[in-house]
Amino acid sequence: MTSPKAAANEIIGMMQYLFQGPDEIAPAIESNFPHIDFSKYKDIEDTLSKEGFKKISDVELVNITNDPASLYKKTLIRSFTSNDGSLVISCYELRPKWTRLISLLIRGLLAFRFIDAPSFFISMIPARFILDIESQLFDNTFIVTSNAAAAGFLKGPPTIDELHLPYNTSLEHLMSSHLTRVTKNTHNDIKVHPILNDKDLIEMQTNLKLEKSAHRSSCDWITKDEIDMMCQGNYEISKIVYKEIRKLIDEHKKHDNKTNG
Image (cartoon, rainbow, N blue to C red; front, side):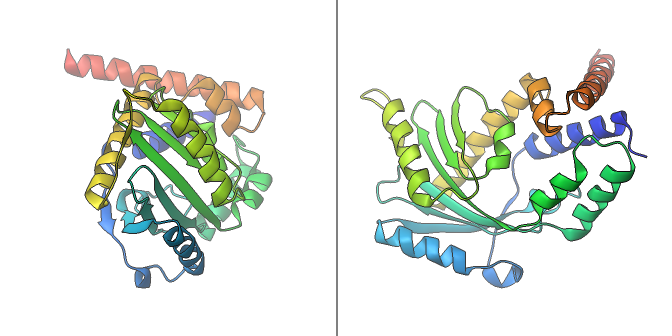
């Protein structure tokens, strides 16, 4: 039976896995991803090429693929850069792992429900086609816009202006929202740092990850508000799980102090 303590351990473990250390990035080819519908990728590529964008990489995040707690099959991330390098647009399809989802459904129904299992299960069924737009400024701040709605419950640091819109938000609307915020945040002293090739992209993504990792560490990995959102408004369960998370973090800190002392 899944206890509040077990739920706390799983949440902290997930956050540390996602945000500790650099991503392991590997080149990817379509033939290794037979479960993905690449027609959507092709549609995006055709649209962007007409706007002067060029493709700069196809990659897989190996550490995310190998995460045993991941709900998704491995995915290919395809990235494009605008002619002047001010915008990077990435697209990828998320397909759920059915065995993992069914396992979570059974655990949620028969054990401690830190999520609303049936509604969560239903929400995860459709494949999601995700669009991310990113810009890096020369002051090492970032502007990020995506239609990965679920990612919005995790708040980023002040150095990242992040906007997560609904899954069905169009590329056109995402670009409009992104460009409005780029214009607002740039001026004579602060301009966009151009991303022109795959090496520039990896450097930007590494810097983004460092900012997010530092922020997660500074707030002890997850906040009470974020736990509230994860528990979908069930504040009693949220309170119990967050209490267990705080106990777990305090135990880790005491252990680290003894080890370093």
